[in-house]
Image (cartoon, rainbow, N blue to C red; front, top):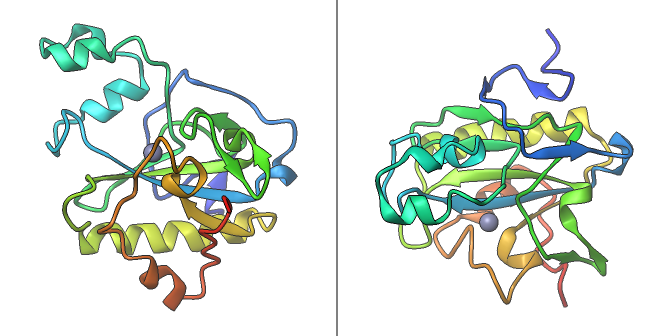
Amino acid sequence: MNKFENGFYSFATSCVSPNFESRHSNCDISLIVLHNISLPPFEYGSHTIDKLFQNKLDKEKDAFLQSISHLRVSSHFLIERCGVIKQFVSCNDIAYHAGISSFHGREKCNNFSIGIELEGCDFEPFTEEQYFSLINLLHDLIQEYPSITAICGHSDIAPNRKTDPGYFFDWQRLVDVNLPVDRNGVT
Ligand SMILES: [Zn+2]
């Protein structure tokens, strides 16, 4: 069985977002960026993140959610607290997860990266199920896209703006299974 078809991962639930653009070349994918997200902030399990990435927040009653409903953002993947993986954008396309960013002198990291959101926040640990799904996904991505040479956090490529995936993300778990963590892209 192919683990990827047209850039979509077989073990992910497809949840397509309109917020993407074409990559010039799949050979250009060299970086994976890890994030955390919770919506509403610090709440889990409401599937509101899906709505953000699908431009469907305008129908929400919550004032904060209304206030961000104009954003046109996305990520390739979301790993929920229970370990379920959702995919919004094909890995062969550019998703809008990194914003203004730079990795080893190269700007606009969206153009050459894959974004993975972990449902969570900066103030509590991620779940065992999330690490299990994340590590499998990372190994499969690196096998499918051998041009990937580094994994880092959003805060490592946009340190003045971003703090995710945060203090509680356990980078050592990735290092222990020989994944290419490189958090020194901004020096
Ligand atoms: Zn982020």
